Amino acid sequence: LEGKGIQASMSRKGNSPDNGMMESFFGILKSEMFYGYEKSFQSLKQLEQAIVDYIDYYNNKRIKVKLKGLSPVQYRTKSFQ
Image (cartoon, rainbow, N blue to C red):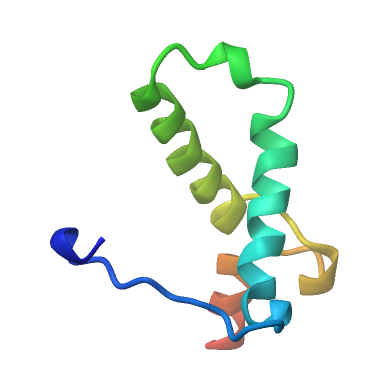
């Protein structure tokens, strides 16, 4: 990782909530766009693009009840107005 300029991040021992938000996001990503579709990706590049597309969908289009029916970007934009 270091050779690629990536810094590893580690949770404190026995403290799983340190990374709870990302664990939740990856669980949602896997259940909504990966599980059941594993065999539809013909290449790693195709899977990478599907993940990029899903992140765009998640941030810009996917509504959340906790955000009053808005997407995360819509909610943030509204809070700055």
